[in-house]
Length: 54
Length: 240
Image 1 (tube, one colour):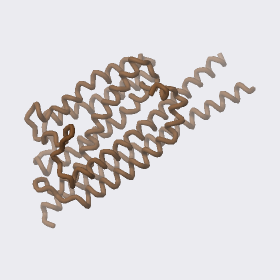
Image 2 (cartoon, chains in turn green, cyan):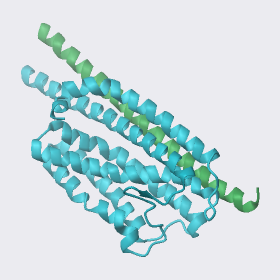
Image 3 (cartoon, chains in turn blue, cyan):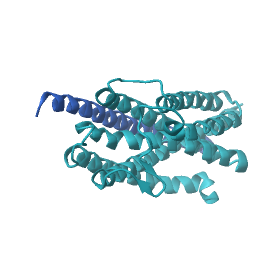
């Protein structure tokens, strides 16, 4: 592997690392935000139904 | 299609579809990127950097596809007043912006060894950067609309108007001189060698499934937030 090929691989690895890391972070963020929002909705729903029963 | 505008029916479908889309998209994208990194031969002119194709092209298409989704959902909201259509448009904005940003960053990384520069202000790169700014504008506008109670028609109109930029991005390499290569894949035709085309299509399919999975997760989050807010308002009005 000559110097030029090593240089090219650095660019390839940088592009893949950036693309994969940002995509995974976006997926994790969207799933965490979804779970939090659904938990909050269920908690509000429970407290509303408890209030109605009283 | 109109049946799924019912939030209950949508949630029933989205609960099993979200993990399915994310899992299948992850597997397909991982296989495509692995093949792109290890199995395809280097290009005669671009050498090893041709492998950036498998992450750059899917994110470019989904950056543009994300805005088309916003425009389509905005049109559906304006015409049929489906509340889920406005939610779908909002949900597509973040993944669209993220994929546009990845496309710009990976394109810049690819440009340095092949063009000798990180950036040029030509038609393709500039119109893609404008798309990223349009996404930022749309996200700010739709968040303000949801928070401040501004009419949701305003972000919907912005979504429709912004779609003008999509054909400009697509034709930019034909209309103006550019360092960027002309379109390699057109309707029913491809200038890309079969060794690259197979993994590229797999990568596009995998990233598209991931995009759809993230949109569904965002829609579920936005819908849950709206339902919680509505219930809290009801509690407050009953207490008063």
